[in-house]
Image (cartoon, rainbow, N blue to C red; front, side):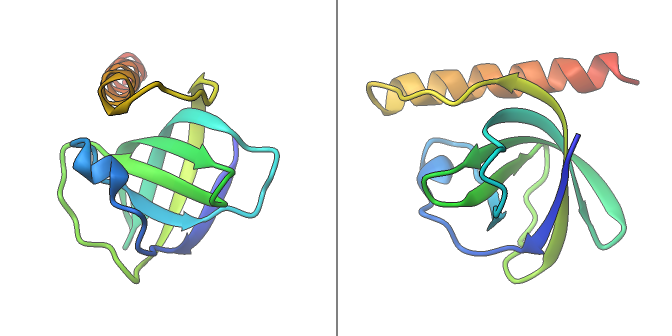
Length: 115
């Protein structure tokens, strides 16, 4: 798949408000879209993540699983490993929260089966 690097920037905090905080880096590849199982690498350590390519804001967002790191201003690399689904619009925040929870569950399954 593809790999992207950048400095973590502040986002809108919408995903965090839904219970899924993300790290955000600029995305300059207009061909990338959707939700992915991903690896986030920072400081030589690798973390499992669910990633979202947001073309409307030109941002790659990654929800790092099972950790609460403060990475603002740090250089990270996000490697997209497997596409989980295409982007879609949701009618409200509850529907979006349910979809994100399902995406995270699928990402967890991907990593548990990849060991």
